[in-house]
Image 1 (tube, rainbow, N blue to C red):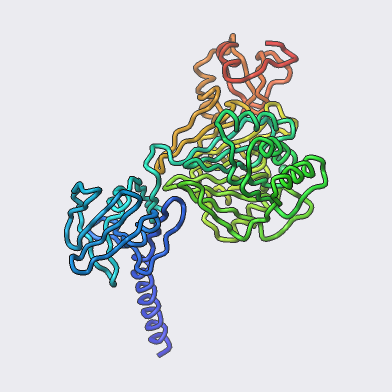
Image 2: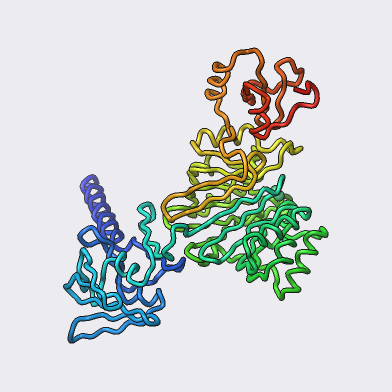
Length: 466
Ligand SMILES: [Zn+2]
Ligand SMILES: [Zn+2]
């Protein structure tokens, strides 16, 4: 008797789950217009393989006015002098008096007119990006590059500038000594307005150089953790902010906002660790289409755990490695959630901390991520078209940023034991094979000649003077 009840309960549970799944399947599609999520009373759905979206809501999100003529079953959208007209059951789409043919005609679902997202967006000169992983439609400005991220080479420090459709977000600004560099970088790009600034945490190598940004640009909003500092760099930064009428805002839980075509989310740890400012770091996620970036400040594994326990969507195409690639950050569990294709390490050449750590580097290898490093490659710039990324570095594009043991071995085999130079992937110095301070086997990279070593950003060892 008991068994039968259990069996029936299982069947019932299964049916409920199926129902939830089937229902959720339709309502799952989200639509972003210029980084803002559009709210619908009737959800988008896939009809004949096309993503169909409620016409009025999308047109209005694009800034158009919509009228509906019941007699002709016709929707008319106007934005400035541009007009778009479509008729129920007809594939004809009139854009400024010119007719185009849609592959699926508009249909009424629960009293709302739905039409293919692609045609609705393109009719007003936008483009559409579909992200299969999150089942979302991104309607963006119609340009090849919809999002650009610059990782600035500020030595043993952090600074990244994010731009989309002329709006800017600066995440950290390097040390006080980098203020001029930040000023010059913004000047070079012609940035006069920084819509958002995030100081990830109150350490000088992150917030020191933000003063340069506040001197150069008019800032819209500044985010920083509640944990501050009484150091001079911090006071100076606060004063410069006050001069612009700004105070430092602590982000709301998962606060998010549009940045041009992209969506930015700020994540903060639930537990505050007063003894380690690194673990107060604000995490910043920037998404556009199927490309995304996660900036983790100096978050170490304790904060990574904290963020993981909040069940946030951490998946990212590019991860800015926490704490300059330190072994105490980028734990396996965290990397498994982020699953980055690229890892950027913002780190100074020959820094006294031994960053990046060999353990962290090996975890990036295990994750199959391609590593870029500011100490070897200078400024690193990613451009996104919403689907794919292109990367450019200011130097040493093909540097061996994270050589695997097997690739080291094959280089070794290709180069005879005579006349070669041995580099240390951590210290970025190269040695003669006879040097008494050679790196451990797994930290070695071999060069056939001196020029190659120098070209890859390696400095000669002071002991053996190769
Ligand atoms: Zn720090
Ligand atoms: Zn730092």
